[in-house]
Length: 275
Image (cartoon, rainbow, N blue to C red; front, side, top):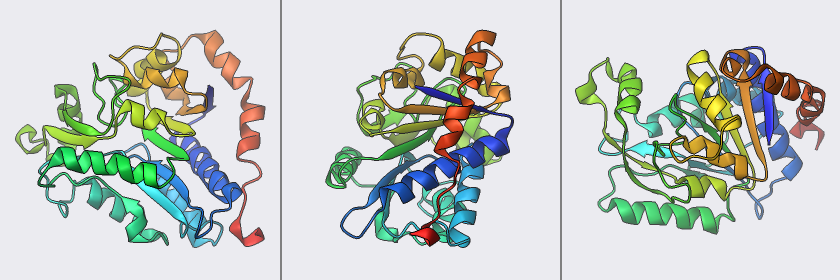
């Protein structure tokens, strides 16, 4: 497991974007061999998405042969609602890059049969050859996607009731009106993300510090679902200084001592212009 500690949110976002960029380019995707990327929503990945858009506009990165699978979607929110994750992904990322809309997969929270929708999503991931790199964020209670505390660590894509902490955290997107916040969502399971060949989790801000402590220094615990990734063979946690506030000094010192190794993963930054 790697813990990459950057000074602030912008540097953490840039490091994550460089890592994604390099992984896609080193994979050398083609029409017969797509790179498959799992993607999150929320505030944390916005800086990363902006940098990826920048690399694309500079001609350094193409998403033409990339397939994406999003982590989750609210149930019952119209697809064109400004706070749906469909809207979020198109407005903040997809419409700015060259991805084929048919290759951008997002769960349908208005499907007539939600379980059928979840099962079909798992099948699409399987048919795409699995996920090469799953990027995720976490909530202050350590949940990954909408795998709330107490979720099974072997769970698959399913319908999930949202915890009150999550509803409160998301109220800011709905004018602070709790009655407008969806109470259910479709989400990939912890097991779904664990099946990815590689996982990168973005954690920034002091309000996520206790969750990072639980993820790194404590044992695997279904009450902190992000802790499951201690058992994944290729996990990278990318965080800023504020997110390390609850970690032991020696833990931070240990991982900072490895930054010269971690930085070789993003420096040099590869470009498709050179290929």
